[in-house]
Structure formats: structure tokens, C-alpha cells
Length: 197
Image (cartoon, rainbow, N blue to C red):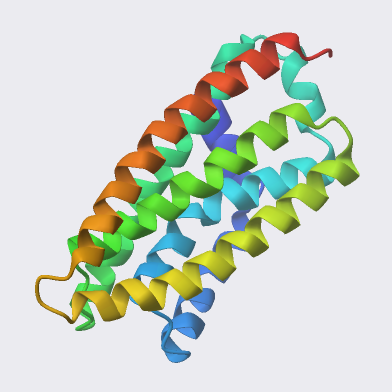
């Protein structure tokens, strides 16, 4: 798993330098903090999948001396790991610069990250052609950004009201996304077992 993580970081070294610029731009545009956190959480996994699909390296993963289950487990565990590390690191940086980051912001951002993975990874493991995979990446990430921005403003405004029932809805949606994330993980394990080299 460590080899996969090193590969994901190495293939996007130049792209990682773009992340701080993107975050500063989003802050300048007064994007909700929870949306900025969500972008930071999904940046490495989605960018790695995009670059791997574009270079058609994903096809050769099944020929490596790793089990198919290891490949799927890595994708799902690394998404959680990158999400938690990226969210925590950006939260600390934003706190240092005086921005207010709440637990609800982090919860919503992780919920969006899990939601993206629920749709994205089964498509990634099921599709064989490079074009189909790239189209799915564009479609899923566009939907993610639309959802993140629209719901991000709603969650940000919800936090300003005391005893708002929508806060409970965010918690319930987070629990649902965690359950669907695990279900999606098992679906991908089934998909990759049946996939031809």
C-alpha cells in the first residue's frame, strides 16, 4: 500500500503545487470553508486517478504482484487517509489565518469526499476504456463541485441559526454516506474479482 501512495504522490508532484494556489483562489472568491475543505480532501485521490487513467497505467495494476483486493482496499483507505490528513492540515492553516472552521464544516466536507468515492470508484473499476474512465471522472467531479458549492452555502448559512433542524440532517447524511461508502467498497471488491486483465 505504501508503494501505491508513493506512486500517487510522485505522479502529481507538479499538480500538488497547484493546490495552495487553488485554495487561495477559493478563499478569495469567498467560497464556503466546507467546500474548500472538501476540495482539499479529494484533490490527491481524484487527481491521481485522473492522471493514472490518462496515462492508461490503471490497466497494468492487475498485472502487479498485488492481490485485486489490495488494489481496491488501497483506493478506499487512501481516500480516507488523504481526506483526514488534508482536512486536518487545511483546518489548522485556516485557523492560524483567522478563519472559523467548525466540526460541521469538517463533517460536511468528509461527507462530500465519501459521496464522490461512492460513485467514482465503482465506475473506475468497472470501466475498461480510457475515454469512458476520463468521461466518468469529468462528470462525477463536475457533479461533486456543483453539490459542494450549492450545499456548502446552505450548510454555512445553517450554522448561523441556533437550534436548526438542518444540522441534524447533515449528521444523518454523514452517517448515510459512511454506510454507502462501505457498501461501495464491497461492490468494488466484487467488480475487480470479475474483471479481466
